[in-house]
Image 1 (cartoon, rainbow, N blue to C red):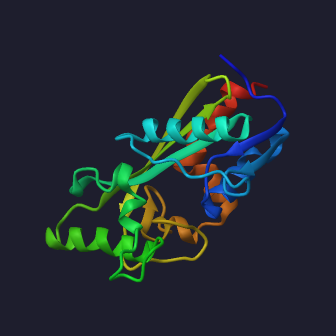
Image 2: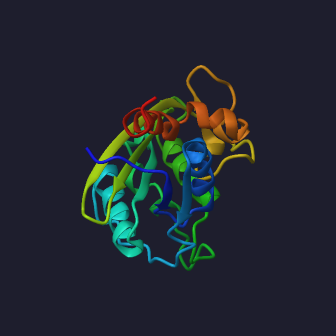
Length: 208
């Protein structure tokens, strides 16, 4: 299996919050992170139906576009009572249309959509949910590898906290009382779905 060497790595994202998290996680390993957004690379169409497929699409597009190794993250929130939705379409639920002040992503609107669909099921609807993360590494020569992580929790309403991004303000990790957006970023880095997947990447790519 191909290994990362110290040096430049393209993070295949235009999401500033996601870039901050991944940069912080990779900082101890001598990796200089450049984002696809900073390099002016276009966002490829995410035509996959799974997190793995979409992560690989983004990683290969960035690796080819920059001629450097690339790391892509595809992650999302799944709600048990909604049959696993929004899941792989997590970001799509935040797309603001012409009647919602679009274009762009409105995460408060997205959180409201989830809550509205739960409310339709009545006050006793289960609020179990989980975050999934797939990290895909790709090289310009087409080599690839994938790491998967997951954390389980429950949804709360109204949203709380300003430290996270995406659906973080409504997600409470099992065993905690705070939302992901109320947890200090350094603590979240140690226990999130992304941290879970990243721990597997580190063991594989940067063995002690």
